[in-house]
Length: 122
Image 1 (cartoon, helix red, strand yellow):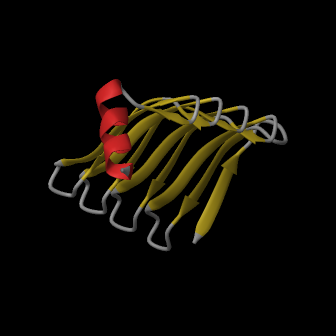
Image 2: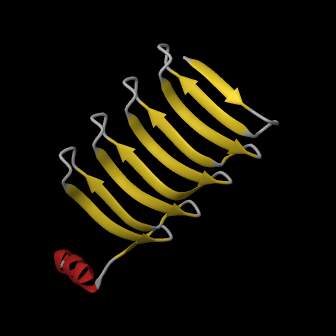
């Protein structure tokens, strides 16, 4: 494994890590010593596995993960480090397994979902 840093000054720049064969494994940007920008991780075959955006060290914006086959596993978004907005998880065949909405890290349920959950508790 080999690493590279492209720093203009301390705590700022792009950090990359590579597999033995030279294939990129990891890439992340830093600003003021904190994650700042898109973080990406690949497997040994070059398949993107993970992509998330950070601002000042905190998850902010789109977040996606893939199966090793290349099919999307999950997609969501973060605001101030908390799940915010739509969250969708898929099977490897592309079928939706879980679909939820979040507001500042808390799940949001509509009236029908809440009624069904209450009925299950009875």
